Amino acid sequence: MVDNDDSASLERVAEVEAGVVVIGAGQAGLATGFYLQRAGLVPGSDFVILDAAEGPGGAWPRTWPSLRLFSPAGFSSLPGWMMPPWDDAARGFPPRDHVVDYLTRYEERYDLRVQRPRRVEGVARDDESPNGRLIVTSGGHAWAAQRVVSATGTWDRPFWPTYPGMREFAGRQVHTVDYQGPDDFAGQRVVVVGGGNSAAQILAEVSVVADTTWVTTRPPRFLPDDVDGRVLFTTARARITALEEGREHSGVAGLGDIVMVDSVKDARERGVLHSLPMFSRLVPNGIGWADGTTRDADAIIWCTGFRPALRHLRPLRLRTERGYVPVGGASGTQALEEPRLHLVGYGDWTGPASATLAGVGPSARATAVAVVGDLS
Image 1 (cartoon, rainbow, N blue to C red):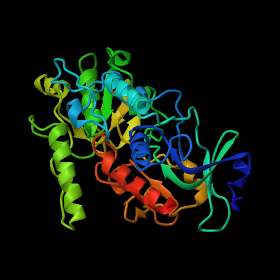
Image 2: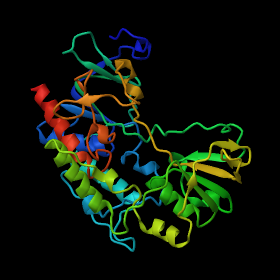
Image 3: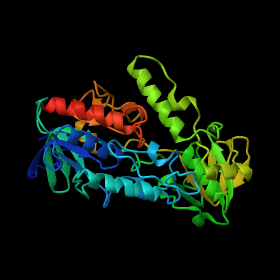
Image 4: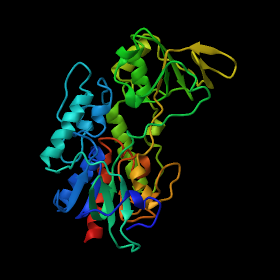
């Protein structure tokens, strides 16, 4: 079936024919499924969606409970069905559980028939023919697909930077993926690493119960107080239009990085929303800088982002650039070295704002159009 070092892990098993296999049932996979269905393909027959999780919601059920969106529900919706409103004292910004409920009801509403838990181990070419099938394997199951859409996101691949002394540090080190709330750090000296929204929100709530130090590789950039997801959505849409017309547009990056949600504003009022330059090493009882300065710490929370979760594509031996698979085509999501493969929802490299609830729709729609066109 495949002639490479990964073939041993992709032993031929009974194959199910499927025109399209979508890998991942988070927001990107669901949006792609919606558009495939709207184009006339039948879920569970013409296309299947495979998801590694035990239940719906993509990565959202694994985020920390107090996480909130940056905008009201109406600006945080997938195509076809607007997220139901969430109205409370936090200006209507929906919490994590509201998003999980929405995604659960979304796949039910459109009867997308997600198969789970199905963790895909590999995608491989069935033979050397460029018009042949791609074989998608999960456990003892295999699907023979004409087209594959990878929508696995990034949550399963947290990025840990490397600093001298990490092994010698005697305290606790966790990544954003492990963080479940401030109570675990009550009364401790905690270092929060990172200059993005996750770091700012985690710092804001941990600083209520712990002595916190915030370190960033560059000074954090705060959005104006009146800028939230609604402005970010409008800016992202303007960037998409500009790119389609061949014009340059700085997009969201030109506005800043950190949205001033209520918890972050509260941290600013308490005087804890200031950062120090990035340390150069860890020492057994804390962190240290190049000038010899040190600071004691009991725990470090690494809010240092993620990389695309693409391990399942290794059998295809695609070239990567800084961990990204080069994509293009009319959809902007087609793998240049394997046209039968599309990648949706991993970030701007697979479509402007495609890693967001509100922004993934255009990439998903363009992908569905391209895939259905190819099948025809």
